[in-house]
Each structure stands twice: as C-alpha cells, then as structure tokens.
Image (cartoon, rainbow, N blue to C red):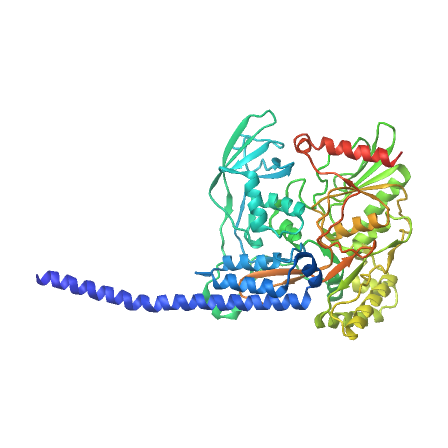
Length: 590
C-alpha cells in the first residue's frame, strides 16, 4: 500500500513538473506565432509601399484586370491572419501571389530557399495533348523510363496530365497571357523550385503514356529532391541582424563600375525570373525549347550551303529552296549581349545581304534583355529611319538623384576616349562613342525636367539611348524581306522588337502571340524584409506602340501569319512547322 502511494505521489509530481515546464514553452510558442504574423504584416506593408512608389502600370492594370494595390494588399493580410501556424513557406506563397496578382511577367519575387525537385524529362502540349519534348539520359536509363521524345504522356500517378497542368496554372502562374502561362506550367510540371515559391514534391511518382504506335508504357520515377536548408524560426525575427540573405548561399559577382552599372537599369527589358532560372536551376533549362537556347528547336529549313560554327555566337546558315532561292537563317535566343555579339551579327548581316534573297529571324523563346543591344541589332535589319516606341516611366527621388549624378558625369566627357574610360569600349554590346554619351545626357535631362515639373510618372518619352528612331547601320544593313518567328515565350525586348518590325511593316511575323511584358524592369536584391526574400522585380515603365499608342503589356504582339504547334509537330520533329515556314517564304518571294 505504501509503495503504491509513493508511486502515485511521484507520478503526480512528474505531471505537475511537466505542466509547469510546458506552460511557458507553449506560451512562448504562441507568442512566437504572433511575432511571425506581425512581421509578416510588416513585410506586406513594405511591399505595398515599394509598389506604390515604384510600379509604373498601375492605371493600366486597373483598366485591364480591375486590379488595385490596396485590394491586393488587403487580400495578402487576410491570408496571413487565417494561418493557424504561420511558416516562412506559407508566407512565401502569399507574397508570391501578391506579386502575381498584377498579371505582369516583369513582376516577380525570389526567395532564399534551397528546396527543389526535378524529373528527368520535359513535356509540351499541342491540341490539348501532352508529349515528351526532352529526356535527360544522363539521369535516367531507357529501362527505367521506356519513353522517347514525341511519346504522349497521359497520367501523373492516376491523374490526367491535363488536369495536373491546369492546377499548376491556377496555383503557380499569374493568369496573364493564357498561352504563356500554359508553357510555363508545362515547365513547372517536372521542375519545382523553392526559390520561386513552388510547392515542392518528393518521393515516387508513376508516369503513364503511350508511344507513336499506341503501345502503353509506365514508369515509376523518384523525384530528384533537394531539401530546404534555410529555416526561418520566430527566434530569428527577434534579431534584425539575423535576416537571411541569398548572398550567404551564393557567391555574388563583383559589381561593375558605378556609372556603367546604373545605366543598365535604364536599358533592361527582360524577364528576370528566366535569367535567374538559367543561373540557379540549369536542370530546368537543358531542352532545345528552353529560353535562351543557342540553336533552338527548329530543324534545318532546307539544303545547307553555308553554316556558322559551333563556337560562333550565333547559330546561322544559308539554305537553298527547291526553286533555287537562297534563304538566310539566324537564331537570336536572347537580347542580353555577349562580348563581340555586335560585330558577329554585323558580319552575318553582311554575308546575308550579299548572298541571300530573304532572312528568317528566329527569336522564339527569347526572354528579352538590353534595349540598347536590341536596337543595335535592329539597326542592321532596317533600311530607313524607323520610329521607336515611347514609354511612360516611373520616377522616384532615388532615380532622380542618380540621374543628376549621371548628368554631371556626362557633362564632363568630351570625346570618345573619355567616354570609353567611363563606360568601357562596349556597353551592352554597342560601341561606346561621344555621340552615345550625348544622347544619354539628353535622356537624363528629360527625366529630371519631368520630375521638376511635379510628375512622378512621365509623359510618353523615348527611352533615350537611341532618340526617337533607329537608323540603318552605316556598314551592315539587310535590305531584303524578313520573316520573324515569334512565340508565347518571347518576353519584354522580345515583345518590343517584333512590335517595331510589324508597326513599320519591315518584317512579316509568324508564330503565336508574344508574352506581353511591355516595359522596363528593375530588380531590388536583398530588400528590407524579414522572411528570406532575395529579390523583387517590378515594371518601371509602360511602353506604347508606334501604331497608335496601344500598350504591349498584357496584349503582346499578334503574328501576321498565325501558327500554333500541332500534335504532328511534336511527334515528327516539327515537320509541319518547317513546311509552313517554307510555304510562307515562297509567298514572300513571289
């Protein structure tokens, strides 16, 4: 009896001790959750202020998508308050959806996250069906994955693949341009990235499909999963100095000269997410359909009589049609210049001008880049003064401060030698001259005058680096017909170049509507936020076409000759697309 009483007493003491210890721990956890929520709400306020101060297309978004910054902010805060147990991952999704609500491919947010998952193949759709477009044979054997490029995929686990992709469009994309969101979701299907805010799976998955003969195949694959190594706990939030930045995860490149670096921001029209994707997740960008692929996915368009070398900057060739017509082809995968690109492109244009009857300018799957470089290439494609679009640009005190410093620098430059001392021999692929610097100074003065007149959003102005027109290149200029190939993965500068070619009737556009990312973009790396936000990008101008002032934003550029990929294209190495291009070439040369 005494022994039982002693045991009972000890148990009571133990339970009381546990209660005494756990009560403060529970209270601290609850306090930690409240701290998490308060910091999340603070971050949302910071995002609101950032976009109210810097985002250019506010009026257009309200007109196009009935979007307002205030409503987007309130929705984000409401989601935070409904979180039962707030986590950094959940908040990343809320911030990502806040950015995506603008239906703007320039607006993006990247997070400090190491989590990712990949499957060793890519898919593309045509006519509502899904086909393998690439297999990474270094990651999977034919016995493990008994499929080939061109085989149709039917199910992921037991869910129809079309349903899986539709769900990804809803949960992971912007709802901006339907065709573009579709292609982006197809890429996400087999490549999930924590730094882009994706929900990242792990474990095994069953893939079911059929080959071109109708035979069914199935494979069980393991997601190639990398776990999250960066955790954000509420205790981290108590010390502002402990905020995680991606600089602690990656080795960042040393910045270029101050003047040179600042002017990049005035001259960039790119999709920032695609650029980061190529840098941080090369597994997602190995297919010939990936943005920026040098050769692209098109097979040869005829009998080749001359071809560039593999080490050359541009994939280019001359082919001969059955009728004896000589056709030039050049692939322009990006408007981000490489060293020597201007000269290399000029040499190609000289060859094509002397030796071809028509030029095919392939800029499909181009994520954009430098305005200056893009216009320099354009100068070799036009044969008369070509009007350029105007932009309405968002101004801030910080930008005006930089413009004032730039203007003073430009005033001190008196010749080509001094210009090259400040900016280098080449700037964004273009030769640096005193004339270029004078044009830059005019641009800075226009911006400063707009600000001094009381405006934070300018009237439509030319971007300043080329004035109001592009003129034919003095030594390399193509004067014959041009067929420009475009598609739904052309962003920003790759929206703008086709728009100019179409508005001036310099080229015939063939393919599908471009993405509709119409404006310049700026990045803010390591913004002053608590929850591991590495970078935010936003649109700082909205462009107007020269055909009456229509924006490119959200509308994109429609082709003159529509062509969408077919099932037969994906199963037979794009033979129908090649035939359609050849037919269009014949029409243009009649």
